[in-house]
Length: 267
Image 1 (cartoon, rainbow, N blue to C red):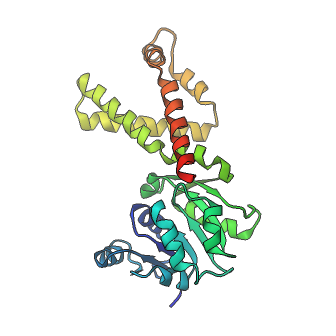
Image 2 (cartoon, one colour):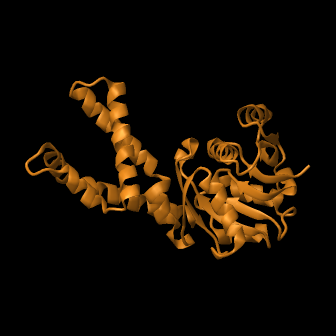
Image 3 (cartoon, rainbow, N blue to C red):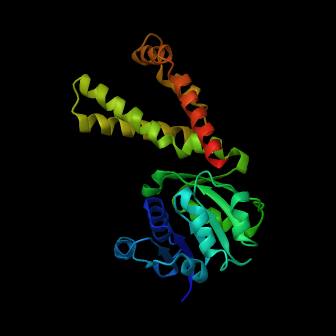
């Protein structure tokens, strides 16, 4: 039995990627296998995703030419030790574990082609942002394969490995910042008299629409902000209050600390 792509790890992110690959018709269910830690997870993977599953990590590497390492960072070395003897120069290995560098993985992957990918949790709704890095040039055909895998769950950007800490701060962790903002907007809506569920829907749609306008218009975010802020109006009063509270500086500092933590994890 052979598969086009195998996942070591069957958590939320692996599941989101598998669903995206199937719905995007990149791979058929029969072309995918996932390895998990426990027997109870086997049935879950087979039922929820409709793909084959195994408890043996090395089977995934043995039967798949593309291997996605979708485990927590502290499990990566153990997993690589289990599959190192199976990997060949024909294998493509993609790690989605934060904090584990290409150089740290290369002693285990040998001549296999190696990539790092950083998708974020909106992969669950095919709206991920994924950063990809490798020593392999973008002109190599294998890079398109990696691009196609993660395009199935959202947008993709190529970066250098040195930029990965910034990417984690900008898009890896940022869904949490957005949820915090929407929660605060919902609380404010309730304070001002709106039902909570309605306030959350308004907040979410507004942030979604603002993001879509930025992506589709190509305009500077400051220019789009200026379109909303009429002289002496309600929005400029709110913007001035946010500036008084250090809104932008708080975001910048939070993201700087996020990147610093990523660097610490890599060392």
